[in-house]
Structure formats: C-alpha cells, structure tokens
Amino acid sequence: MVLSTHQGAGNVMRAVAAGMALFVSLFVIGCSGSEEMLQQQQQQIADQQQQLDAVQTENTSLRQRIVKLEQDNKNLEARLSEAEAKVTMEAERANKAEADLSKAMKTKTSAPAMTEMTSMSAETPAGYAEAWSAFSAKNYDDAIAKYEALLSGGVASNWADNCHYWIGECYYGKKNFQEAINHFEMVTGYAGSEKIADAHFMMAQSYDRLGDKAKAKSHYETVANEYPSSPKVEVAKQRAASR
Image (tube, rainbow, N blue to C red; front, side, top):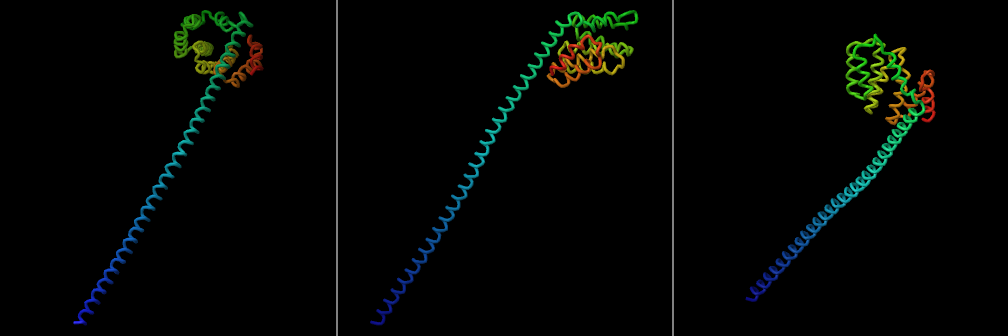
C-alpha cells in the first residue's frame, strides 16, 4: 500500500514536470514567434521609410526642376524682349534714315520713277504702262498682278528686270520685305540692267527693316563702291558707315 502511494506521487511529479516542460517549450516558441513578427514589422517599417525617402528625394528633384524651368522661362522672355526691342529700334532707325533720305535728296528720291517715265515709248510692252499706273497709285496688289502677267507672257529681258524691280517696290510698300528682297535679287541677275544699283539700295533698305545690319551694310557698300554714278551713292556711304 505504501509502495502504491509512492508510485502515485512519482507519477504526479512526472506529470507536473512534463507539464512544466511543455509550458516552457510553448513559452519559448511564443517568444520566438513574437520576435520574428517584430523583426518583420521592423523590416516593413524600414521598407516604408525607404520608399518615403525615395518619394521625398524625387519630390525635391521635381521642385528643383520646376525652379530651373521657371528661371529658364524668365531668361527666354528677357531674350525675346531684348530681340523685339532691337528689331523695333532697327526699324525705327530705318524709318528715320528713309525720311532723311527723302529730305536730303528731294526730287532725286524719285529718280527710278523719273527714269521709268522717260523710258516709256512706243516700244513699251502692252500692259506695262497700266502696271506702272497701278504702282504709282499704290495699288500694289494690282500692280504686282500686272507685272507678273508681263513676266509670264515672256516680256523681253530689258523689261523683265524692270518688272522684277517694281514688284520688289510693291512688296516693300506692302512691308513684305523678304519677298521684296527676292525680286530685287532677281534684278541683279540681269547684266547691264540700269536697275541694279537701285535694287542693291532697296535690298539694303529691306534688310534694315528686318534688323539685319550686316547684310544691309553689305548692299549699301555695293552701291557706294560699285555704282559711283548712282544718285544714292552718298546716302549709301553714310548708311554703310553707320552700321
């Protein structure tokens, strides 16, 4: 009976020990699981912080780019304003120069027109006088159409240069300076044309209006150096020297 009691007590102690061992194991496992979860959470926080840092870095970069673009835009606007002011100044100077030319030369300013009037004769092509009349009346579009009709109709070369010259004058009157230059250049292709000096002078005038001082100076110098008998040679010299 005593032996049975001791055996029972031993069984109880073994059961308690087993229970304690199981508790300890579960506690260790629980702690291990909690530590692993904590590490995972810490890693997630670190990842999120890294993503946040990347977004902040990108945001800073974007702000810097915006600031640079704004500055570039301001610089561009300043350059555009400067260019516009320069073109305006050149146009005003060209207008003043043309007014001075009219005052200085008086009746000589109409030299091409006078030459045109005196050159008309019985040999003048049909329709040429009408084109000249339209130009004289400042009906530039009508004059251009009439001169171009003469050119397309095969007018003789000694009249073709005149047609191109007066078409250039029409476009100059319309303030289409580039198209005026195109026709004045065509005049220079007719060797011996009496309009070449005037064409160079008008090309210089047109380039002045476009703000291209270098090309304007070149054509003024051409008149001054190659056409000393031109009534505009003195004015051409003055303008070439001022550019």
